[in-house]
Length: 232
Image (cartoon, rainbow, N blue to C red; front, side, top):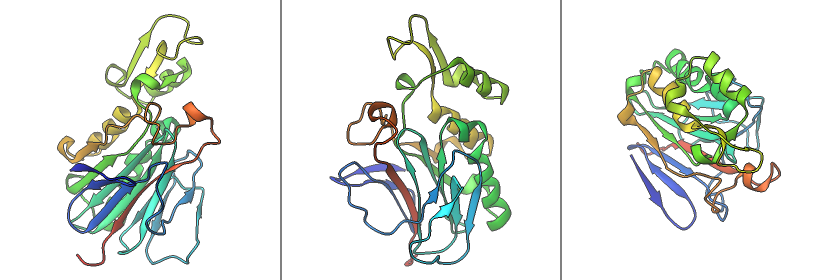
């Protein structure tokens, strides 16, 4: 997999028969994208046919489909967008995973849905971790660290603590690598490490992308989308 930079879209090379991208602040949407009213939960929607134009799903944080020509996506402004593609079964997924979705293991529930509904094998899935807040920018409270520990996440791989007055300096206090936490979930589900790609963008330090931490929750949203092409 590779990242393909152009002036507008951040595109991902995930194999033949699929188109995947994340928008930048300056982007114009290149196509209609089916999204959901996200609630930081773990519900997964399955779309089996081309939906009515203008439909927005309510209460879902992941979408799975095998419908060709349908772009599905998630909206983020620091949370982790995860795009998945199984070329053998012809199925795709788009996942919104903030820390709440992460501790609810939404990525694993999405993979389970791909397995049960489409017969996907995790060994055949490729995944992209799109633009999201980086470890050094993601200061969290002790309670978040405690929840991650309770849920079995490897703290030695995803957490660090820098002593000092965290209220005065964002570099101090507890920090979580939310991308690494989601990579852990993907690998634990059976997706090979070599098939998981991190785009390497920290939204907090990259002004081309929206960041709720940097700009408040009222800022815009990056759309990360994936579509099965009709011409495979």
